[in-house]
Length: 463
Ligand code: ACO
Image: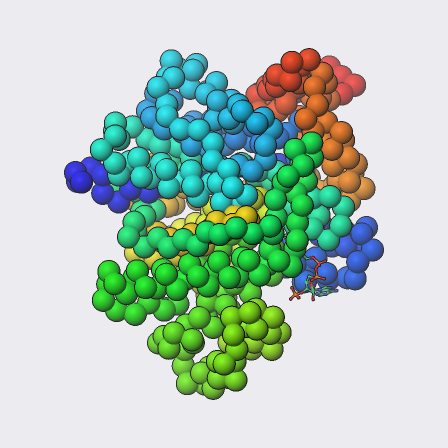
């Protein structure tokens, strides 16, 4: 490997989520569920959703063009573009090809990569492809670009409050402030019907919610064990929760993240790791004889391990939860939005830290991997990434809709899904300048987008 290719990883990030959102508290009331079910039971605050002028293509066009502009990247400098998404708009034409519009304008059509799909894992597959390319002999010295884009919507019922929507773009190259520790990657992949989309006429998944929770936790256990084994082989010492400053999880809803972290603590106990003190050992001892299956079902174990994990959770997880709690599940973008929350909250103190990432996609595919962070150099520095993403401002400038409007929007999207020959209301009044929006799907299913400029927004009845 040449010195140029060292520390391959993420140089720059941009996040986009729709300005439309619904408060989970209002949704609880609207759905007639007990107070606290979504806000405490699922741990969610708010949920973003696409209006009729937004979709995964418009969101990714926005994220990519904004990243290039804000970090001063010439589109000619991109040599690979990979997209992760599970929101299928076309069974053949990739989302990546829509994004090529941005690059064709500058004469750059020499860009490898297409889309990767497997539930919420596609973005991680795309990221690995790009990082592997930068580390490989076929790398041509240009940047890679990864885009995770999804609109997570569910049929009416208990899964609906676990929706969300966002796109994240990540620039990939050597000497990155967010560098992969490439030897520390551990996967668990198997066959399960926990969440899948067999009905191609519907955007909604078929979901076995309880099974998906267990599959997620089993995959987490398996990845963590393998991750620890690999660490121990390469570093000749034991790994425990103490060896990473932060853990970032794929976040369908915050409650599962809370359960996941306490599950890692239980794993450390079972492995006899140094993160578990004598008092904790005593409290966990009654559970040491449980079989794997019994341990997933034990409410007592869940309660005790969550109590024991509380202080560590506040330090190592809480700073990663802001965007997933506010925006909801963003499928492929969800884990990277959690990571973006960490950069937003802690960018000035992250240099030297190790961050362990857990990516999960139903079906199922999962990988645990890790980053080593450094401050970097402008424009590719942690502080500039926080500055460009501007998360507080984006969250603050959102528009809250009543649940009835959210339900009405989802009904319209249901009717339009897979449809042709319609024009949207072109109402981009809530969109920030520079945001792309859908204007029309013609009689040949071709999709057309505009970019909002300061004075280019038309409304339904309008001008
Ligand atoms: N106050 C506080 N907590 C409450 C209240 C209340 N009023 N009411 C319920 N709760 C708690 C429950 O005790 C439960 O907690 P627990 O998880 O610790 O047991 C939690 O809220 C959820 O309530 P349930 O009745 O178990 O939830 P329900 O069956 O209605 O649905 C589920 C939850 C399964 C997560 C559903 O939303 C779903 O299917 N979501 C999509 C699947 C998913 O996201 N899976 C995750 C991995 S796969 C992926 O990323 C897509």
